[in-house]
Length: 44
Image 1 (cartoon, rainbow, N blue to C red):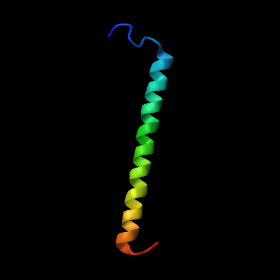
Image 2 (image 1 turned 60 degrees about the vertical axis):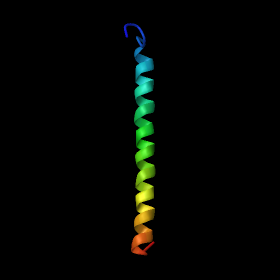
Image 3 (image 1 turned 90 degrees about the vertical axis):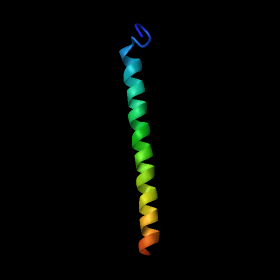
Image 4 (image 1 turned 45 degrees about the vertical axis):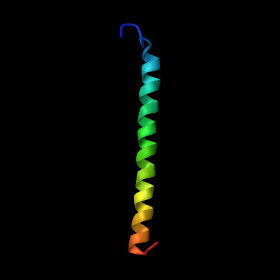
């Protein structure tokens, strides 16, 4: 593992893409839950 990713900018970019990917996935899950909740409750 020595020298595989020695560039700190590359590590930072990879971490940011992972963080934003997780946030996008969580936002999609929240929208799905909200849509499902509105259909179950019958209120918009």
